[in-house]
Image 1 (cartoon, rainbow, N blue to C red):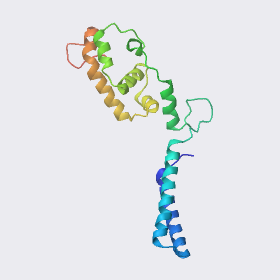
Image 2 (cartoon, rainbow, N blue to C red; image 1 turned 180 degrees about the vertical axis):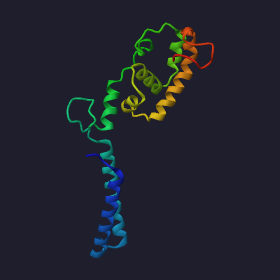
Image 3 (cartoon, one colour; image 1 turned 120 degrees about the horizontal axis):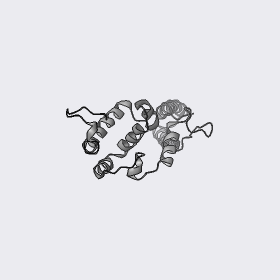
Image 4 (tube, rainbow, N blue to C red; image 1 turned 90 degrees about the vertical axis):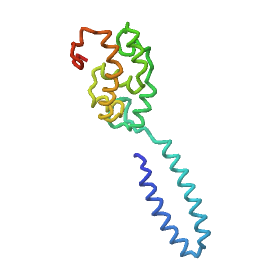
Amino acid sequence: MSFNRRNEYKRYIAKQEVQKREYIALGLSAEQIEKIQELDRQQFLSDMRFYMHNQSFNYVNDDFETDEQSPLFKRFFHCLTTYQEPIDKYLGMDIDSDDLIVAIKRLSPIQKEVLKLLIDGCSVEEINKITRIPCRTIYYKKKQIKKKLLPSMKKLFPECFDAKEGDSEF
């Protein structure tokens, strides 16, 4: 079961109100009630920190591609399996152009990951599922990648670009 901080806080506040009424009925002073509630508050915050940092991964089997996994587990597993390949092999092809290698190195890590997934043939929706990046952001990243790589691509593949600006196979 997942942890929801807002719901837990609501339960805590309701519990505090009930306890305050009980303490008043027992004849405790306002100062004593305040001290008890401060101790309870510190315990609640400690518990919240514990639960936030110790969420279970909730995976059913060893198949890491199931939809039942929590996003936390998917991100954790992705971080474990991420390997930074050399830039010329990063895209799955040998790159002879120094301009293109420099342009790729200037991309942010997110842009590099989106570019790699696009070259692997993933759609925007598939990239969204893999990286948890919103679709609109992926479209924007594609636009940024194209803007950064287009000059070096024109030098490398001049036959793919017409004399008209903007027309290309890329």
